[in-house]
Image (cartoon, rainbow, N blue to C red; front, side, top):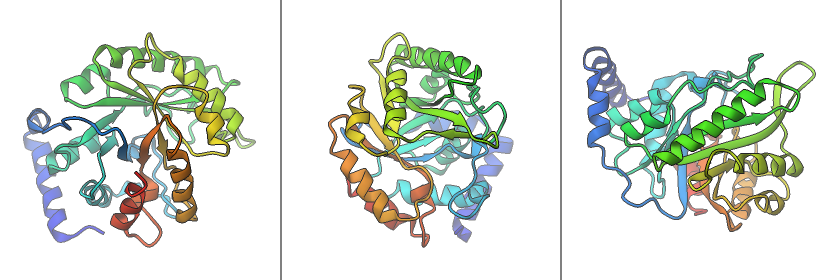
Length: 293
């Protein structure tokens, strides 16, 4: 997808990173922030690479091409109705240097240490942004993944780390975006998220109680059956996640539309399913999703 012009911009970024790394902090300091985040949010997510999750659709290494990913991100962020981005420091800083984050809501991803497919996946260490770093960079919040495997003692460490992060973010007046799942190991040892309504009610209930205050906590939840019951488990505001590239994009849109009618659902956080849509039309996929809001 990458064009000659965009390749030239990326070459400039590579040069800046090598010889003038202070330019990143300078770009963060002068960035125009979102004056007043809208009541409904449309966020583009790109924090999967840092966890080693590079698959999109049938391509196991799709997100491993950084130039291609950044170009798709820039196309998405320029579309009407897109409010901001969720990413790890490397992606956010690339977008800062590209000038793609002016006036946007920016949420930093915090725990990426539970690498996809690893034996230690449930021990999801905080290896990216910290609350003080998010505040220094003038970002709007921090996101954390919480997978609760009742059979894995490592879950306790992740629960505690997420609780501390929620407390620290609230102390800085920043959004804590918690993405909770009940999870279990399959026969081959792979950690799998349980996407039943009952499992999500448990996950939402656990996530809502993390930290010394929930005043700044938002939830990031998948669309599952009986979403009314799932969202009735908490009064916290929630954003719907997109997940894998869907086989039926129209069905995915219909699911998002129905869930967006629920009172606590405030928008969408979607990554691969919009950045790598069937047919490759990023702008069209983003426009269809943004139209739901």
